[in-house]
Image (cartoon, rainbow over all chains, first blue to last red; front, side, top):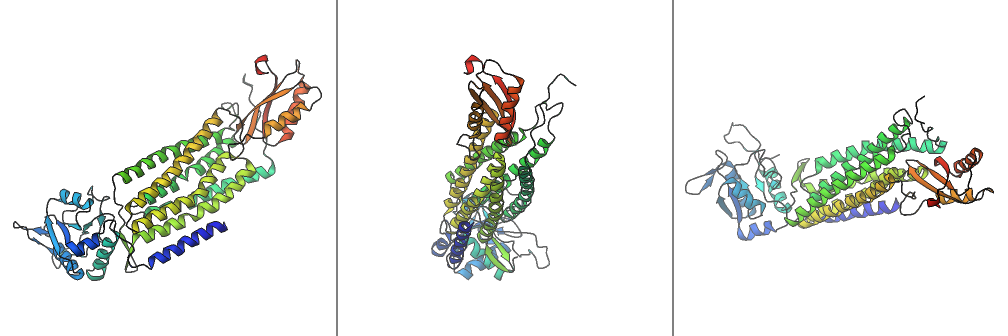
Length: 159
Length: 317
């Protein structure tokens, strides 16, 4: 019993030491660094009124604005990649995109395969309903996801 | 009276062993309670970690041996009747086989799952949770729950091990052994989740494989034991691997009888007890001599139950 207690105490001490590090948790594929150096690649799937992809390829709507505010706050340049939802999610799963907005269904088969942001505190119109909307994030990028979720909760009124 | 000669009821357990059996049943109920709570907690905190999922499956699986033990112990108490004419002492052996098959099957499935995750380079998803207004990496919650999950099986496992020794009861010993090993499962899970935090996506799948491997190892070992038991193979000590010294002792004590021309014993385990045949090389055997041999057997150890005495055939000599 004593040996176990020592092992558990040791593990706890190691965890506490880890939590003191600034760069923990980290990304599996360094996507945070990538966003800072090469821009933040965001997949946009036409899903009015939340996310609107116009004929000329420009992206608008409340979710696009939210992502733009995040990029501005972090000093990232956004590269919009409009496309069909499934194709974009495939790219996201392979960690080629930093996020995918629009077109998500609550019972989507993609649900367990990628990460999901905290629910956004967004309304399509000032007095409209607030359904549960989330941004899809690449899997395995803990630092990236944590930073995005912190921004959502601290600056965008997400829960 | 029917034509079947019902076997006499199994030998009463000595007081200490009877109490140990009651205590073991109580511990099994506690195990069910604690491990259900732990499993529920793990499920809520699970996230996308393969290692944690595997640890959860192990925790849910650890409910099987105590359930089987409780069922078997209740079934065994019904004893000999018109249908079960040789008694129900093998209830524990049957439950042992069931646990072993469950363990092996799930172990195989989990090894496959872990390999698949590793080979397809699937990145585990670990999101964030909001605790009192602060956004926290979910990995911390997962590691905390894994740490908590290690405590009850270790404590219960140690208590069961002591009882298993007092009762010489293999299924309880196996259950206790698994419980004792559960802290390693939790530790491997924590290493896996901590690895995700370090950006090592494969650490999680590798930790899951280690846990799955240990489940499979337990399962295969128990399956081997269960097959031996069903074949009435040579009795083994509690930890298995070594022959039980009881048959040897019995043979030595019987050989000391003045009228004895030589003897051999063929005993097997039936749940808590040892039963079997004592074969004598004498040409004739009286009822009084048979009783004498039986009395010696009963005196050797409380575990000796139904001992038949017979004259060996030439091929058995």
